[in-house]
Amino acid sequence: MNKAFLSVESSITGRRWVGPGPEVERMSEAISQRAGLPDAVARVLAARGVPPEEAAAWLEPRLRDLTPDPSTLRDMDLAAERLADAVERRERVALFGDYDVDGAASSAMVARWLRALGVEPTVYIPDRIDEGYGPNVPAMTQLAERHSLIVCLDCGTLSHEPIAAAVAKGAQVMVVDHHLAAETLPPALAVVNPNRQDEDGALGHLCAAGVAFLLLIAANRALRGRGAKKLPDLMQLVDLAALATVADVAPLIGWNRALVRQGLAVMARRGKPGLAALADAARLNAPPGAYHLGYVLGPRINAGGRIGASDLGARLLSTDDPHEAEALAARLEALNAERRAIEAQVLEAAAEQAEARGVDGPLAWAAGQGWHPGVLGIVAARLKERYNRPAVVIGLAEGVGAGSGRSVAGVDLGSAVAALAREGLLVKGGGHRMAAGLTVREERLDEAMARLSEKLARQGAGAQGPRDLRLDGALTPGGATVELIETLERAGPFGQGAPAPRFAFPAVEAAFVKTVGEGHLRVTLRGPGGARLDAIAFRAFDGPLGPFLSGLSGAPAHVAGRLEIDDWGGRRKPKLRIEDAAPVG
Image (tube, rainbow, N blue to C red; front, side):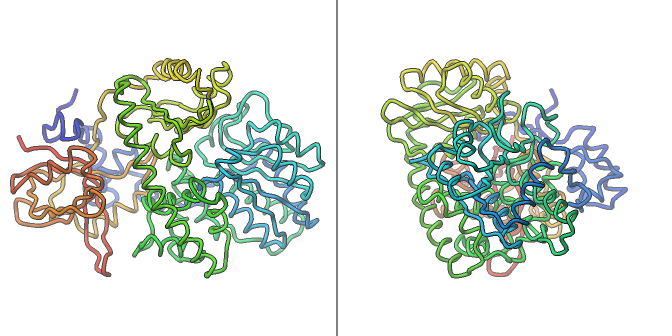
């Protein structure tokens, strides 16, 4: 094993710091020389496997060059032609979307495309509590009575009975999804899903909005082939696909990366009233980055589906009325504050229960009576982050548990949950690699979780021990400039599958420390030469980081985190988001 970076074998949060290896150092030197990039940026590219000859192109990914051919997906051409038929015939079309960001963005994207072509669709988002996830028989039956075509977005792959009910009423149904499929597909006209069992998986990393964007490319192509001249500009919808890609934790690789990069550029122009109003409600004072999509805008859109009206997110992303957008954004902002309070209560109870049960195995799980179903996925994500293993959180009511799970890299939770459903231990369950949903009878809860633990253990869950903190090198406070951060951002966007660059700041002092907000810590770091760098540690007092930083009293410490640009007050300056720290020596 290589020597720990800065000799930090166990940091304040219990992590071993791992720096660039010799191969990365050699590669970064070649990249720096060939592309003329700063050493810090070259190390970031080298660590992500970018060859020197591709470094320049990597910093400027072109969406057009990376877009896959939609026709490589099964049923895609059939779905595109059917959508083109609906446009030409001015049919009544219903869009049945999931209540999360991916479903809301997919629904808004297809709705905007149809409206641009003269078709006003019905957008239907089910209620999370009353209807649950995905199509249900009553809703699909009612939609089929009034529409000739129903498009299920971010759902429907496992909805055999509801789709059959719609078909029996004379409607045709198409599924545009990315969740894992069973061997038998529902009786839909088309099931466009890169995670069908008869797909090769090459596009399996797309979220539903990514698949829907490819469908619109194919539908534009179909209409163009029929002689249509004026077609919607899909580049004006790419911001919605980008939002969903990040919020649904899809890996930012290949086309996804270019999609998000271009989407952020479109979003910066504030062309959609809903996104602009939401950014204003969240007090974003600069164009959003990938972080803001996942941790600022995404949770607010999700708040409607979690604890309010499920269709708020789709309505916000669909509207072109600034006044309606402002009202919807304000309501989502209030719901998000309520969601945070509920989440904190459930998280405290779930963590206490999981720790009492033991969190050194392959699965951390908790279940409680009356836990709000809208926060279970978030709490599972918090437990996953805290214990570095897959986590499942279940709310119990009237003898039945409904829950959500989140996984860690390298462990396919969705397939394990789907296998339990096939075995009969779950009433139903499925998802994708990083997230899953399930329903279980309370009397079988312990048995089901024990079996799930067994399946996850076979994939290596829980065997990796405390997480390493991988660092791209060391910087001084004076070396963290706005210019450097801007160049680093060109190597992004960063997120799932493309970790943000992290740097260590060795032997710095805390010249200023102040608690702000809900347990956050604002710090000014001072380097050996006297240069200063503003920093913040979010939720620092949820663990040992806050007390450690608060108690430094001028003593030097190693600090590590991610750099960003602070635009507050119109003055751009560097800022460090602190993630870890360690004593010197």
